[in-house]
Image (cartoon, helix red, strand yellow):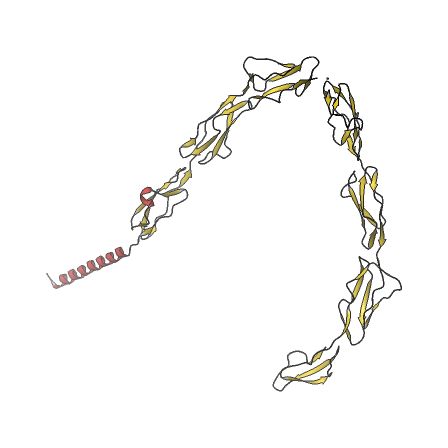
Length: 439
């Protein structure tokens, strides 16, 4: 072999070794994958669900959860250098569709027809449901047996003493069928004369009674009561006439006040009673009356004075049976007496007897005194000046102290109101602020 060929052979052999070394390094660096994250409505298959680590190149599979089915996409993902390939599988909820038909009824799908929804069987009027009404949409369709709707019938009604009913049948009555009751002569029917075959397979209402020629106490209409001659009686012979009167605060609005006992029952109450109205309670100078509760019997009206006026009398008026009860109050203008003076000061304007509402006085202090508080006071509700009067006080200030400075002119202690001093800084310092200070 020539020298050139030998050199080329050695170089090729070195390249192969390098490639092998790189391959081994790359293989050593390949990473495992942790448990893959499932998409919506799915989970890992049984063979993969217990694993926590997957080697590079491993294939894991997903399956749709119970109640869901595949809507496309591969169920598999692959571990590639520590990362999973994208989840392609999509899972859609299962639909149960129609649960079927019910004769003489229908199925309520208000929750829908998808997995987990509950449908309810409902029978038409006149039919009873036989079976469990609820059906649940499961993984393999509607769970539960479809109920049936059975026509409602009623057994034979019980008879009544001293009376009878018609029509009569041998075995049963159909739903909504009506029977009529009648009493024997000399007896009166108390209760409903007709009964209907209803839900629950019973006749409603309860059967009536056949009773003898007296009436119990009549029931009054709204806002009325029995008259004095009838109120203490508990039994009224046939043909008796009883009378009603309107309650206190109400008056007749038409209809006869009398009712008559006929075969144990009273004739209808015709009287109507309407609430009495008190109308206007009158006018109040410098005020008004609040009728927020109305002007009918029992309502309360309240007198209110305008700003600057005090109410004299009781503000409440009550609408009674014969009109407004209570005396109409008055509104008296608010005034304030002479204000008390202040020590070392005075106020203005000054009056001899009183001040009118909202009138203002001003306070001033003597020289060398300062005013502490409000300099003005107003005649207010309660017939007093507000706020309280101020005080006139002597103002004394402490010796002004300034670091690296000194007094050069002005007042000397004690420093009273409006005293002033002039200061200057020591050599080498600049003043910040005003040279002259006033107390």
